[in-house]
Image 1 (cartoon, rainbow, N blue to C red):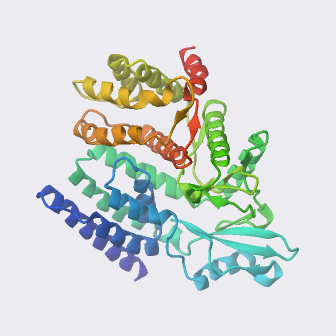
Image 2 (image 1 turned 135 degrees about the horizontal axis):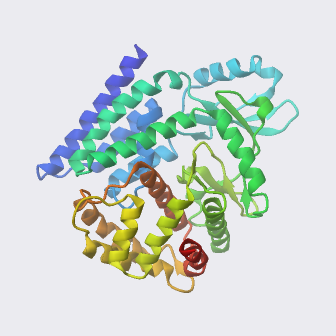
Image 3 (image 1 turned 45 degrees about the horizontal axis):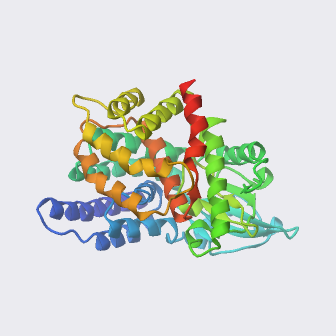
Amino acid sequence: MRERGRTRRLLGLGARTGGALLRTRLGGQADWRALGEALFEGLSELKGPAMKLAQIMAQWDDLLPADLADELARLQRQAEPMPWASIRETLAAQYGDLDAHFRDIERRPFASASMGQVHRAVSRGGETLVLKVQYPGLADVLESDLVQVRRLMRLGRWLRVPQARLDALFEELAASLRGELDYHAEAEALARYRARYAHLEELVIPEPLPELSGPRVLAMRHVAGTPLRELEGADPEVRQRLASALADWLTEELFTHGELHADPHAGNFAADAQGRLVIYDLGAVIPVPEARLVAMMRLLEATLAGDPLAMDEALLALGGRQGQGAPLSLYREAAEAVTPLFRPGTQDFADVRIHRRLRELSPKVWAVMDRLQPPADTLLLSRTLNGHYWNLVRLGARLDMHARTRPLLAWARR
């Protein structure tokens, strides 16, 4: 019965979304704010795949209608928590007598996401911990939910999104969700990243506690921090330290270790009391092959050179362009929009002129999507990098990207 109820609610959300899109195709005005509110109310209670899809969409700040993006972004910070009674059942299945392990567990989570929520706890020894608890029964309904989400995603064709892109997005979503159910893998990633990046003094990664963790509960030492989304009014020097730490870490992740933290929404990052960057969630880490990095850097080099033919060659090498007729004029406009961030000297990621130009390009990109259809691994990589870019924008980053990218471009040429 519960599974049939979830299916009915997902189909109901699909009907509301389809109605809004149909009005736009018929020349009417869709109420994107009302649609976003309906999606928030429904998905924050359903959890799982549909909610994850909405969170991914919310990261496309430069593509979605602003009112819809604002409402979807609430799913990253205000999702309705699962009732304590259900969470307690999961904890009891893991620990048995909770009082034997903890002095206290906060009933109200301080973070809720698509696959689980996080509760503070105090150990018997008096140490503050956090418990990431998987939503009860989620593994049982995941595959049936994915079937319904695939149907829901077909509505993307109303926005002229090619089927190949929708299929790639679905496969990314499905793989990500299945991976996020594996708390053993996340605990291993936390331990690996802590050891690997111990030399980065501006980076903090919580320590996993294997003796208190299990298949559906991940225990970590508590690291207090101010969420990234609440730092707009923080000291500019602190924000620049955080931006530099984020850029340094991403560069080392990609070009030294061939991996990438693939869940860049702002709720996964914070600043601790010393102004260091805290990374809370490593449930999604993807490998990035060296050949893919080389092709990406060749595309960047062609873009910075303003060479549309070389850009097309690089896109073909990436598998991101098919069919006949390269959109050379679009390449030129894209190069003109991106190049200012890579000029010599410190550049401002908060420069609204850059965002405006990127947003203005979006309809032109959609118009040639019959020729620009990135494969699944490129789509995931580009979405992730786009999310990290917007985190730098939120921090008001001022970085010398020219100096940062020169060695990487030289590496790709070798």
